[in-house]
Each structure stands twice: as structure tokens, then as C-alpha cells.
Length: 182
Image (tube, rainbow, N blue to C red):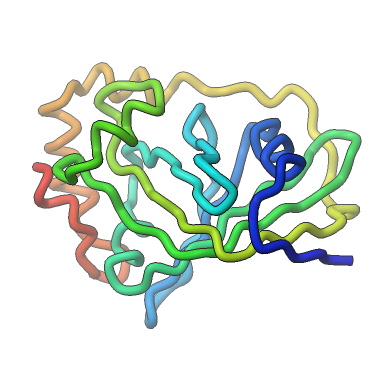
């Protein structure tokens, strides 16, 4: 049975920090809903109602485009080990671009180099847990080095060119805000 909480408790934070993967969902008022898996060392619980996560360069930039239209965001973690649980954090988020006043403060929370694209600052309004009994177990999850290697090979200029080509708009054609950082 699902349980709801007004904030991230210590047990919730411990669960979040133990997971190697999380999922983010956003939606503009119209168009497609975006749901993406995230990994790497890219998420920090900054308080009982605040989470920051680093968005690295990828093939799309849906989250940024959606947040320009509607700040709603849901993050979800599910346990793939012996103890089942699903945890969701619901709230509103803002996009912190490289030209934002607090970029350095938030981006410095995370390791990495030119692959750093945006940081999302989520104000958590509700946390919900549910059983996760139907989620399968999975062993041997490890981080892939592919994205970091790809970004290092491209360098800052190559990454900006990639953003200009692939990350300016969502798949529905909405602007993502990345153009100010090119």
C-alpha cells in the first residue's frame, strides 16, 4: 500500500542514495510525456524538500524544454535488490543552465567535465513509497564509462556543437534554453 510523506525522511534519503539508477518524468501542457532513466553520480539530496540532479549531454533535451513550459517533475527510484520498494518524489523544478548565477555552486556538487549540460533543482512537495513487489531483482549493475569518454573526446567546443545540432528543441519542437550556452 502506498504511503505519502510531506518531505524526504532519513530512511528515504538512505534508500535514494543506495540506488544506482533513477527515472525522471516531465510533461509540457501538450505533446509527449518524457520518461528517462538516469545514472552515474548525478543526484544529491540537499534537504528534506530539495533534490539536485546533474543532466549530462544526451541525444535529446526533453526535460529542459518541458520545464520551460511547466515546472512539474517526478523522480522515481525502485530497488532491484532483495528488499523491494518504489519511491517517488513529486514537485516542481527549475533548470540551472551554465549561464545561471548558481551554476557553479550546483554543478560543483558533481564530478565530471564537458558532459555537464544542466542541473535540475527540484522542490519536493510530496514523497510516496509503494511496495515494489513486482519489480525484478538485478545483480551486477555498474556504471558505463561511454558517455564520459565520448564527451572527453569531443571537448567543450565539440559538446557545444552537438548541443546546437541536437539539443535546441524537444522532439515536439519546443525550445530547451540551451542556446544561451552555445
